[in-house]
Length: 114
Length: 117
Image 1 (cartoon, each protein chain N blue to C red):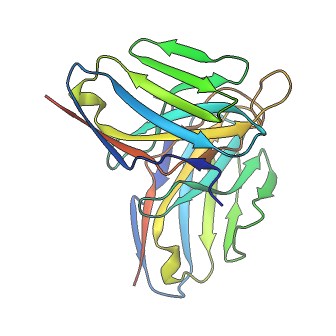
Image 2 (cartoon, one colour):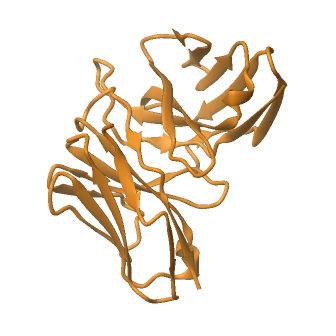
């Protein structure tokens, strides 16, 4: 089955220690999104890639970076995690930038900060 | 500033009855709306969508109603089943004149639906 896979499912890191979350997809979709969802809050879009074109949301902290080395993979890098960055991170894909086809989500990575 | 709001954190319904989940939005540029369902430890999965050129869209037991003047949409599940117990997210995006979404979604905070046997 075509899928969006996030690794790891659970990640624990220390305050200030860089961490990378991974997302891969077998759907061959052009667009990949990263969302942050804190407890009982709405998922919030951090940034997205349309092919290799990176699009950052205006209020995404500089501490958050992303890389997309190829169509299948996208990474979320948090350079110096703070306690406020503990959250569920969701990756999603879409076939086209402008489309009514719904986004497909992975199962998320839950990040804890010690 | 929360542009999409789901004011009921939770809803409890008896099996076989109707579940009505509500969503309000403030951004008048939103023209495309979706509902996602999320089970624990899984990612959100798409349920149903509606473009602002319609006021109703139906798919089996699920119907979404849109009242653009009130900036309100609702999801009706009839009849409700225990397997429908999940968190339901409303999401919205801007769209072009033809009703095609620009892709970037703004989510509500979700409503936990519990369907009792």
